[in-house]
Image (cartoon, rainbow, N blue to C red; front, side):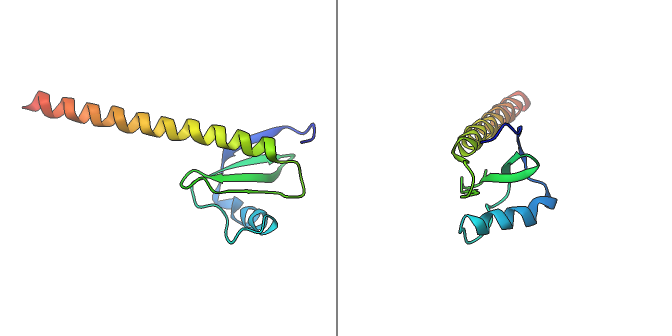
Length: 101
């Protein structure tokens, strides 16, 4: 990885072509399934991970192992946040049902 800054973000619809190119570079059949997190270096997509199934694509011609680790860590955080949100939502729903009798 160079001295360029790294940006981890959710993919935008405008990233579809860049994700398709990245998938082709990585010999993947298709880009990762949405929603997708991407790692951008110097304004270029270098790696991506599906939040749905964890599939990863990365530029095989660049050192991307650290980027993939960052994406996997952030994906775990986001999945945990979603699980906690669902648990809190269920608890609130149960409490509301109990309160209403």
